[in-house]
Length: 251
Image (tube, rainbow, N blue to C red):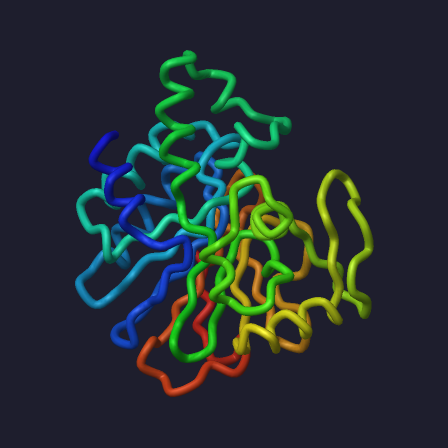
């Protein structure tokens, strides 16, 4: 546990992916150990980087095995495996239900996982136009400001808890305990940040592709859906303009 904490402390809250090889983006796995094992079996190779978008625990039957496998691989290949923070990793800051993983832990175990989870990065970017977060991009002046975002801040809340509504508008308020944003907000923030496509997770009941093909939501867990999707990105492609430039695959 101490070694993984040291690795996470050394890495940035904003992961900048290399401009070579391919990237695989993985949505919520939520204790679906088979999903994680399948991704690793297919894509844990020298020319791929793997970006898991958060929510590794709760809901599924194998939360502990799932997160322990991911942390093991992160320790093994720190520059190839990246684990973003989701709202289920932020439970110590903002509790929720269901929280079966957290409630199963002893106080000592909970402290260990809390210390690790609160070191996870918030976002990842590619040089060819992709931004990735768990929820929604934060309303900051630039993508660089993500580096200054603090756990528990409004920006953090947006990144790990934010939802979208597939309609015009900016901010629709907090619905069902989540802040909900519209197309106007999406376009405003993506323009400020200078990215074309958002890859996210978190929201299983929205259409996977919205905002004219510029926003992709991935869910990679049978806890929610029978189909588990991932996205594969060619990092050497000059420019990613829309979801059409990605390969979306089911596992």
